[in-house]
Image 1: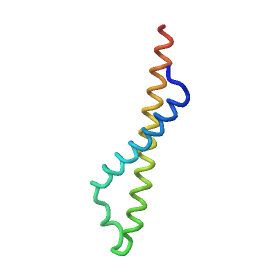
Image 2: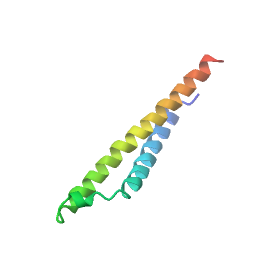
Image 3: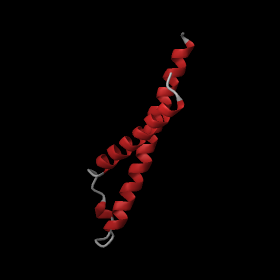
Length: 77
C-alpha cells in the first residue's frame, strides 16, 4: 500500500505526462483552418486547454483504476 506522499507524487507525475502526451497527440490534428490567419495565438491557447483537459481526464481515470485495484486486492487478502 502506498502512502499519501507517494500517491501525490505519482499523481503529479502522471498528470504532467498525460498532459504532455495529449498535447503531442493533439498537434497532429490540423484544425487551424477554422481560425483566421491572424488568430494563431487563439489556436495555440485552445490546443493547450484541450491538452490539459484531455490529459487530466486520462490521468484521473488511471489513478481511479489504480485505487480500485488496490482496494480490490485488500478485499481478497
